[in-house]
Image 1 (spheres, rainbow, N blue to C red):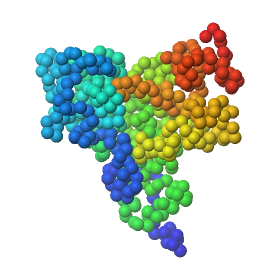
Image 2: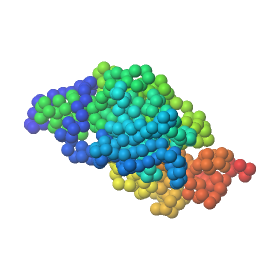
Image 3: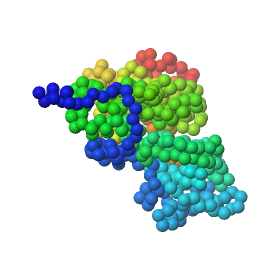
Length: 470
């Protein structure tokens, strides 16, 4: 009788809908466990007002000279920047390249905090201008990120010119991914005037779940709706009422949530498509599936464009290509892997389950969920003793060949092409510094030819040939 009463009294909901944004705080009124988890995440704290609590850089009357761009160099020239605080306001003062005077810029927002922190000042025309010096948590100092990326010399004139570029108008470019629901009400072609607004600082609930007004109204309007919606979702596998939930989306729709910001290797003509994307099931035809664009850009071997670099053997190298490596894996093509299966979707720095973001037995177990043929004797496949380097799926199939330069110090993180196979022959042809392979990442005292010989012996046919003349 109780279930029958529910079915009679609850209100059915449409699978297609359009809604408006309500803000993360509204979501937190009901989602009392998930909301605090998200609040402590890097996503939630990506964009913050500049305060004593949020600014991580040194603004204690700090002076910066161009020699400091080189890590470990001893400052010797006159400073080109001064960082200080007056009361609650932080300032970055840059030396004008012609007058020599220091021009102070009050900082309104601090962006990021884990690896580097970007500082924004508001201009008279409403543009939030990205200042050229950023704080590196690894260097423990300021550095010019764009000069580091482009390997160009740092001068007072160049730092000043960076603030005149169109893409330094942060609230017309970067804010699309660093805030939730950016609205550009007005701008000029030169990007010196901008009227913008957003719903939440940082990457909030509706950035991934879509606008929530209809969901909120549905759940609040009739208490029976909550129970019935839970039954429909959990037991009947229906979509959640008036909100996008990743587990109910098709693979392309679910991955679009992450691709919008992490899949940057797209054609320029697709930029506005990504800009207008919103998760959800739009009756009006709002774009909610970007999968047609995931692999549209070519991957030319040896490309050196910053963050979109490619190794000489055609394997993605730059951090902007990380999502691309995942999409091009046979695991993605032939199965249903999703980002949130490994990464906690609400606290994005944490694993979805302990151990999944490291070479470990839990991450092996995730892979063996599909590759069941390897379960009886994993060592027969890995040829390495269980529990040692080389025995974990990550070691060989997710090598650290994606370059990250966010802190001004180059390091490498793991490729997400889980189906990649070590290619020591490419290292032999191009050199390990231009075409690395997983075998020699560990066996650095051996040659690529040595690795290719063992691969051919252990996995016949895994290399085309072991050419002694390579």
